[in-house]
Length: 184
Ligand code: APR
Image (cartoon, rainbow, N blue to C red; front, top):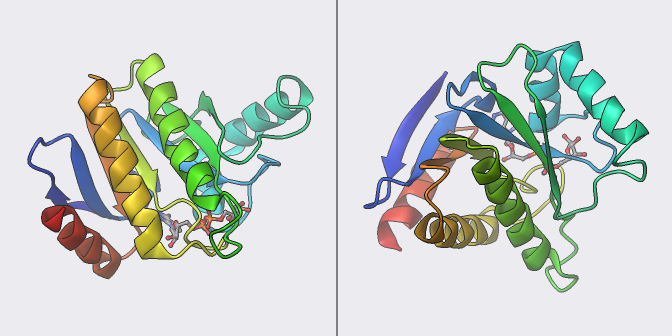
């Protein structure tokens, strides 16, 4: 289940609640780790829903272009296997270490790099989970501020993706994010 909870005045940035693997737009972002071979959280959910084709695509990247893994703050696109979307954009968020080790800059880079890839691949719509706010421990409110700032700035400067949807796993988290969106 995935539902829209809010959109900003421009209509370009939205807040959704639910399971990102059920998104029916053009692309979704995966909160991956540098190894790119799956894990828990949203990474695990996306790999389970996409099937072996996604793992195969990630293994191919690790055997070639990304022999040393995907660095934090960077993003790479693959096919989407059995998911409804066309592309999965994998990004590696920073592990929270108190906020004075470049975490905000790396998280901002995750959003910018993922959005730029979506634009370059001609994706009309992109769903992005709350990168780094789970296992990686980034405080949700600080992460949301980075996400909204970067998504709004990108939307103001780029036509694609036309719809940028921030997806929160629970309705409570989405409602809280919607309140911040409305107030900013
Ligand atoms: N749909 C949408 N959001 C989800 C889903 C889902 N199916 N599953 C989890 N989330 C949310 C979490 O509630 C959290 O708010 O995604 C956010 C990111 O949490 P994580 O998935 O733990 O990602 P992150 O904090 O970036 O840690 C990445 O965790 O899963 C491993 O392999 C991954 O090592 C990497 C690390």
